[in-house]
Image 1 (cartoon, rainbow over the protein chains, first blue to last red):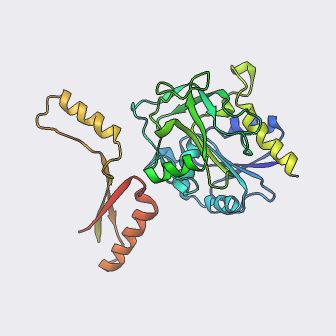
Image 2 (cartoon, each protein chain N blue to C red):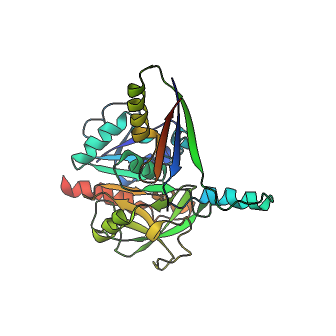
Image 3 (cartoon, chains in turn purple, blue):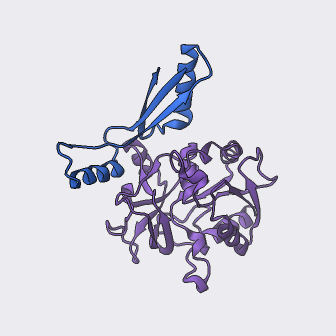
Length: 232
Length: 79
């Protein structure tokens, strides 16, 4: 599998996600935001975390309109895989690739802690290495992760099974306490209609080594690589 | 030609920053504050003298970037 990790001014998690992709067996190339094309043969585009353009205007607003995003939109329209993590999720929402928006956390605090997520479905290219309903232990680190959408969008996301992950406790129970940023329906990540674009606030790339406290994030990258091994 | 664009949150969209400011004003003892909503103001200089063209440019600026119309409204005033 070939992954392209897009770097914007202010991205800062590209190194970690590249390492996670490589350790799962993907080839990885870095792509600057001003490029008009993705590298030939790109299977997966990753928009990493960070603070693109210093979060000016709205988080992800300026990056969402960068030159390279036309190529990312075209890739997604062809059915290509796109993963946005944290600021990458904000960029996907601002670019129109995913619905809704990430607002300031309801408690106004930057939150940075270990967080369990419930895997809502495991029949997508991103989650096949997990079990449905499994609680995975990853990290969150954001000030604007409060997922918000209008009632109709929310109904569609729920009705079509497009919620990827919800904030949960260690046993996979979706509780109010576990939803520390105030997201509607405890949403931590969502898919596009065709399930080929995933945006998520938490950082699976942080937890890929026992040395740093856990490996639950690995499954996401292994799922992606194995999807390609099967498809090829 | 100069213009001012004001971007505000739509009614019903939770505004935690506005709530925090409202709380701070109350704790400062500023009387008579019932509710605060935070927004953004953009002062824009246009390099055209044609009002119609300016309006079109400003509308495009708002729709494409300045406002996220999922949660925000915008208002354009040309000086």
